[in-house]
Length: 118
Image 1 (cartoon, rainbow, N blue to C red):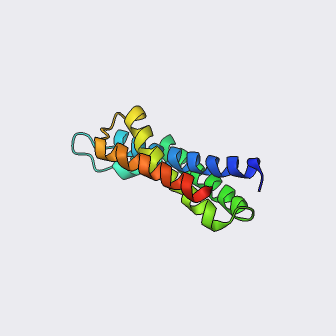
Image 2 (image 1 turned 135 degrees about the vertical axis):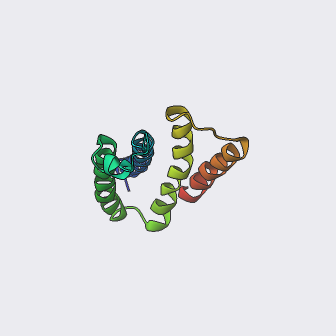
Image 3 (image 1 turned 45 degrees about the vertical axis):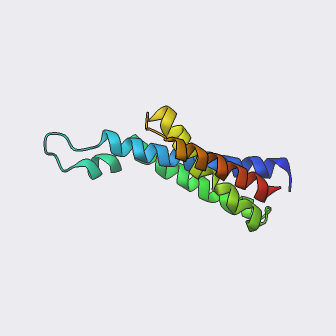
């Protein structure tokens, strides 16, 4: 196991975070206005849906590569970092509210991942 593989695993986490934020933002901007019911169609043909789709394709390919080298018992818990990064990124990029208990949970997740990986 080398540092490049671990960096690729972190890139998988970043791709997953980007994908989820993109999908959320795409849903937000494609919401129906004036009684329209075309929000799903608007989402499917938006660039944010394309970003989500491309991120998940690359994420899956990289995940398969990483699993060949890093044991699943170490690699899979690292994916839990998405549960910490998504609320943090949505707080700063999407202006969503993150309450104190969520910050505590985020710190517990990060601590848990560090303990499992070491």
